[in-house]
Length: 338
Ligand code: PLP
Ligand code: COI
Image (tube, rainbow, N blue to C red):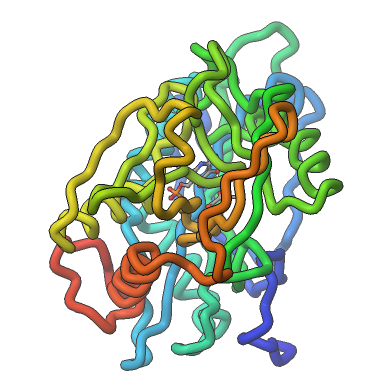
């Protein structure tokens, strides 16, 4: 294994030693298989290729000061993949199979789990694809479930530094009654044009509004949105956003800090009233937002004039990573040690 510069790892793909695979055929899942190939062969008429019948997940493993490896809330990812499978008619992956594959993938690539204190972690990517051949639009009869891993650093190159984002009204990542709450590849394909536009204008990502009325805040690229005001953590409830496990965790940590929590539609007009705003997700962790720019209306919402993350976002961030790395007690039972 080449020596990795753990402290400067980007959020990118790094080849590891093994991945785990399992095939669904004749109505049943087979045994887990270990592969050292980065490639899969599949039928050219596989439903994942033509009709987007695929789902993925993202979770992380962390190395603690004690050297042990901790996996964060994997059962919630298993549940979300189950919900996605229901949504787009994939074969369901049983929780035990999901867990076994995740644990094996981490264990088999143990030396890729970044050292404690580097800020890096091992990103775990479960993938479920319709591999059976169909030419009509219908669910596949065969599936491949696999898990691969990659050591990663921060998703936004700024790390825990405030980023600027822009409101996008010309693009939606999901339809009002579409696949927004599911983790399917099509939502990300739909986000690429708006993301490219945001990058071209110097923004880290896009802030999507609700696709039906464009009145409410939906989510911030590949991350949920939250705002802080009057000792309250406020985050959108919306049928077109991904239910973020990090967001659920931050809501609990906010309550632990004595704050109130509101999950409700967040009108765009409320944006100026927040004291702090941020994006949250497995990859994004907490990414504080410095400015939200609304180019169509020529408005700039400016949250951290001194350029630093707000105090509540900073506390939430510290508490979250302390639990993930084992520096704080895991009072909510979020962590499984390998
Ligand atoms: N929203 C979108 C669109 C995402 O892709 C992600 C990443 O998984 C999130 C939100 C954050 O979800 P989680 O905290 O479960 O990673
Ligand atoms: C995650 O946060 O796990 C994501 O999936 C975000 C992105 C890399 C798609």
